[in-house]
Length: 118
Length: 106
View 1: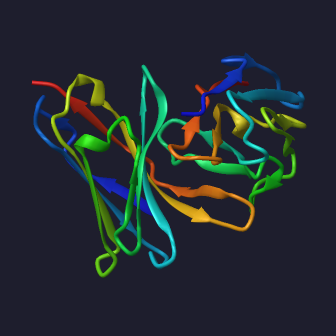
View 2: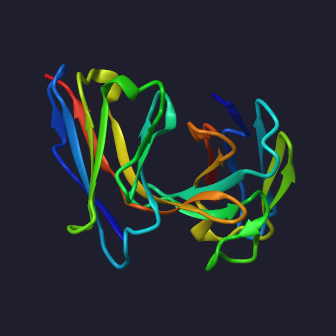
């Protein structure tokens, strides 16, 4: 299971910080991803962090993004800087598995709603 | 980025109906295409991966087909629990991208 946590309200120009807690399995061997869902853009893949700490980001967000992982605590995190109203969305965390046939998002969290507003 | 286009954007059907949702990629993605089901307030659920492989635990009424740029998700006999939104997603190249979704009303 995956569970997102973080503030539901963020002030414009500040940093959005979210944490995903993983339970019921090891983080080793997997990528751990963030996906957001907004009314205007549908589902958007934000990026992923490997269990080793290496990252891949969506180029549209790369300049504002940081992701990290703490396998000892079974958690990974997202920091998105300089937020605007366009970053208002439901943020999901998910496990990304690279299999022989495909790369899949096989387990997701329910999501946490983040509103960017003053 | 690879653009994914789904149709229809919404549909209304009855229990027992056969339902088909289409997804088109802006370039060839071989069979790197996944389908997800999302009900409000719940975690999205993977249904189909690699265009036609059924994810473990998913009912056999769900099936996927296609390759290249054209893909289809079929629900052979719609059930009440199948309401919600369905999304296709390409896993050919990052950034992964999704279709805009198809909302299914029963």
